[in-house]
Image 1: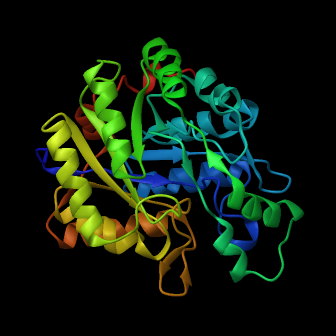
Image 2 (image 1 turned 90 degrees about the vertical axis):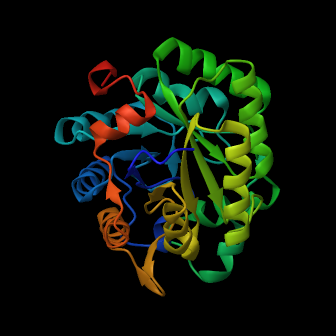
Amino acid sequence: MARTGKVIITCAVTGSIHTPTMSPHLPLTPDEVASQAIAAAEAGAAILHLHARDPRDGRPTPDPKIFMQFLPRIKQASDAVINITTGGGHGMTLEERLAAPLKASPEMCSLNMGSMNFGLFPMLQRYKEFKHDWERTHLENSRDFIFRNTFKDIEYILQHLGEAHGTRFEFECYDIGHLYTLAHFLERKLVKPPLFVQTIFGILGGIGADPENLAHAKHIADKLFGDQYCWSILAAGRHQLPLVTMGAVMGGNVRVGLEDSLYIGKGQLAESNADQVRRIRTILENLSLEVATPKEARAMLSLKGGDAVAF
């Protein structure tokens, strides 16, 4: 994997993991998602990874109508690459998860490279009370939940979203086996280089957030993909800044955002997504690494361009 000279910052704005009780700064309404995404882009994020929330109580929703309340606003106010989830939230069907991407025809979508346990229930220990009834249930249900993406599911997404819409993917790899799954699709020519490989550390059910695992993931990705991929690093919670910084030093791109961590320092909640983007940008620049613009990110990842989307 050759360093192109610049680091792509992805910002994951809200996600479907954290709940409203956990931070007053988590964007929930379309207006909050739009304004925080735009601010993150202004702070230096070249890619914005987006989920939607029900504005009434903050629960994750796959509703394309809600996505369409913020996607056009973000596009009009920013040149950032808009990347829509295909992972959605716990309990959503494949059809629900794809409803917004198929309507929006974005430049990029996330794509989880396998089925996995996805444990959020340890977070129950941190909160005595919740603002909404759904929050406790959401976390508890993850004790007996498998996020599903079978080979057939992945083939379906690659065909109906990738081939049909020209959408490219942020391949989310939560374990070493996911890298081999991606290599399988590359061998079958169902995915095409350059691959944007997002290695994910610190989710219960996936690989742990250890420096040894980061180095191992890069070693295996280099072996499988050579110069055909761009590497990016995502680490959950308190591991976010240390691990993505380490990855950047090793030649990777970085992902931050309130989907992945609500904090900006020990015991200190981030007041916005832009706060985290500014922090990692400062770290990168202090390490003499340059931050990629959206235009440069599009070129690095061979994206179709913001004028070819449907919003």
